[in-house]
Length: 204
Image (cartoon, rainbow, N blue to C red):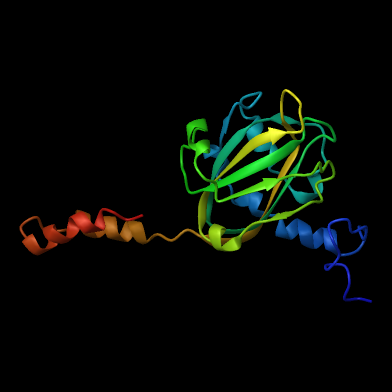
């Protein structure tokens, strides 16, 4: 019977075994968020948005609740996003639908009209147990993630306690610095180098 536990559906009641510790490690991507650049539109109090990202063992902490509708943040490297958990109150203020957008820095509400990478209809999840798996092919190289909470279950405001992100993290590469140094040292008299420079400026 030792092979069981991970294959259970979301309603698994096997709390006391090794699974919670492993899930805590899996949901460690919050440590890879560049908190200083985190941006929330329509948050209820300035700076509240960052409070929804916290360790797995604090996910049910009800001390701080955040009202927000669009949260945008960068990772300190590249992320392959595999799953997301969103937890709120067990009432109509719980998010009912979210839309995920990747690699759109400085996103605004005007941008939410475009097609998201993926959208989810949510169930109420006050204990932060329900994971929504992403289409990994669409989220394999995420430097910036925007989460638009587009609906709740009927309340005037949307309240969130916890957002959990599961995936793989890769350190950022520094190739751009090497290229910039090379260009800075290029000899203006060398026409061959000049003809190459415009192409290398368009690094995406």
